[in-house]
Length: 252
Image (cartoon, rainbow, N blue to C red; front, side, top):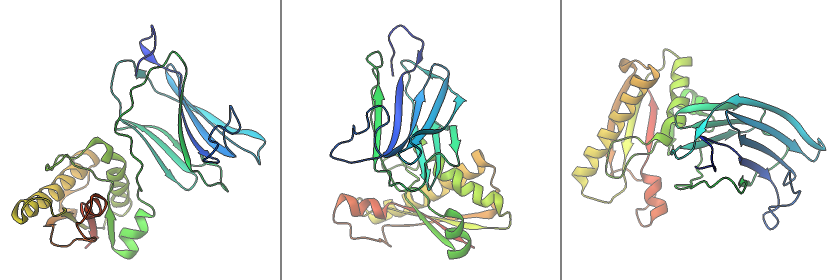
């Protein structure tokens, strides 16, 4: 991200909008029927939300944060019902319990800049997060997640997995008697033995991450891997293979 003659990046907006797909600019400065806008300021992130029923802007606030020009950042947004969180690398910038105004279907993610801002954006991804994590682990007893990502053919966990790992760690912290088994799975690419080994190493990496960075006691976690032996979809295309590359958490 760069800004002309400035050490810090500013003047870029991130918007989650409830709007019409064939006219994404409807409404002009406050597009859509409702939305939440986060603006990267010089040394803070400003946010505001708005809706037709509120006849314009409703709530607003800010949080200290600085993006340096010429540096690479992994920016992530997490939405669950009205709650909106924003992360920069592994740092939570915003946590808004009522950031999204209720009663609207938010279907557009929008990035706006001024002429002075020249961001380079790559690896853009929208994924399902962890709805009802607590219930899945405590009541159902099993949670399947695709939010934990690894480098190709590696057990190295990608940075974008942080939000998912933190959600799971929070459930474990809130329930100190809970013990889990972490299971790794792969798709069918490669040979059986290599995939089995990779799935076990990936499960072990998740355990290490939960212990090292979130303080979860190793004694509360077991690990194992099943490789490609238990697919949840046929390994016949890229979408189905992605479904089979997963991590499961099982209540013990």
